[in-house]
Length: 187
Image (cartoon, helix red, strand yellow):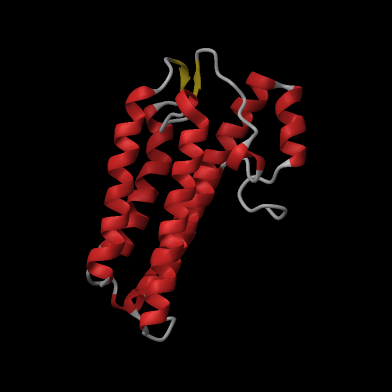
């Protein structure tokens, strides 16, 4: 079931994501291609670790959880919940959204909806989806994939935070002091 359901969830999400990206504001400032590759390549690798039918390294194919239907369905539910959370955040962000680190023309600071729960809800949702996919897979490679994804998002988040402070100053600092970056009330 993993072989079909989890990739279908991710591919459906990616189709929506690409379609929704056509309606963004004009970019005023964009991260370099080299910077973008430093988070895209690790994320692609993490995704491959989860999607490949067999682990490329036998030791990473060892199960860290016992096989079971309940665990698969729990992981699939987390994956779906994470992806839906990203969609909510993307819709709420509106035309300010970009796949790359950017500042848009007439960029607005969004602090409501999912952005009232965490400052980077798209990353939160994607991490939850990675965790769900890893649980559904149940192999050590899933843990590695989540760690890699977390590191890639954390790197990107830190750059975005700096740009937001530069763009919005005290308003962003106030928002930052009230709302956690990725996990409500924790991180």
